[in-house]
Length: 259
Ligand SMILES: [Zn+2]
Ligand SMILES: [Zn+2]
Image (cartoon, rainbow, N blue to C red; front, side, top):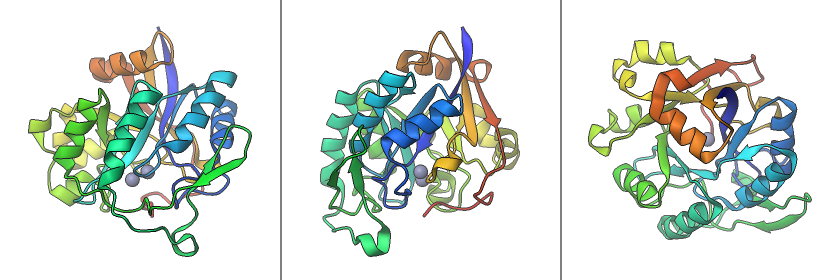
């Protein structure tokens, strides 16, 4: 068993707020160059670029965990991770129906671009992804689990889109096992502010929207090898197998909220 570096919250060209430099290929190569073993491309409410990230990752040796970042009707962001591409796409196909039928305005929100492993633009998502699903936080957590996924509330410390601020608490009846804190603070700082976080395994990630931000903060997992199984086992073991590492200062101001 070894410690492996993971950045499990990265936005691609498919997120309107993600830089157009963030093609799946660019993300995976950037992670590889920075010594990151495992990543997740977590676009808002969908996952088309995960397919291409996974293909490139398999080719150059970066483990890509299929995932996405949901926005619930209470405007809470929830990361959802899955063991297979089939699982994440089946899940996406279901929740897509709960995304309001509002067209994206690229001039205002940004383009939502699907880019393949050879850097070809293969499509545009028409529905605006920066919207809340008509599904509650509780319903989203339960649906992720129904699809054998693993839910992790995103950036729980943030005033915008964080579960603590939006709901006022983290529902304990949902049996959540892990939470993500933003890179604005360390897990120790988060626990000092919100002691209730102590009972969760705490992860962190870059939430990168630009290539230079990838890997600014990583979570180390103690695993046999970077894999879905290793990720799940490490999370179950908690602190002894999961550690957050702040690697560098970066271009984003600390505490800044994503758009
Ligand atoms: Zn978010
Ligand atoms: Zn995000």
